[in-house]
Amino acid sequence: MTLTLHALTFDAHDPVRLAQFWAALMGRKTEGCDVLPDKDTQFRLRFVASDRVKDRANQMHFDLSSATPEAQQATVARALELGAKHIDIGQRPEELHVVLADPEGNEFCVVEAGNNFLANTDFIGALSSDGSQAVGYFWSKALDWPLVWDQDEETAIQSPQGGSKISWGGPPVNPKAPKNRLHLDLATPPGGDLQTEVERLIALGAQRIDIGQGDVDWVVLADPDGNEFCVLPPS
Image (cartoon, rainbow, N blue to C red):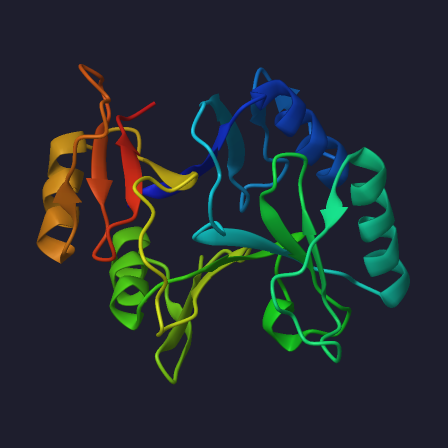
């Protein structure tokens, strides 16, 4: 067994509100400040308290899929009703996806029906990320997810079981924030060994970092682009 993508964690000023927003939009249940998966291929959304000011676009955002044009319109309408806002990130008028921000300004896109890249994915069709080709290769090996796209230095991976893709747009890569507002939490499988997994990730190009975590039972690493992520012990 290999590491699994357990959660995508958001820094949040109001973790409860953001958990409620995303749970309502996605039709999932909550547990504290976690939005729970309802399929084996999904991961938690976790919201943790932070007073960090959002001063730039996030390194990673959701691309939400739409089965029909009507479904896209319904998702946008529901998001706005729950507290989202339209935002301009330089999208072109001819582009059919709708760009929104959640109540704390985290960007996400509601993608048009018939988008081939998001075919056979979940409602979260992709975690669309700013990053290099090398970091896409790193995460493919880290999670043992095959590359499903690798062209013009753009990469994407997906679990063999399906679900959301993770994609990286290639150069130019934006300057790294002092700490990303979103990060991945990986779970060591039952019966696995945390330190063995950490050593494997370091051999692939990760490095240990200190973000003030103190004495905890998980390990904080950075991928080859410097993006923070956590490796959790076996549950």
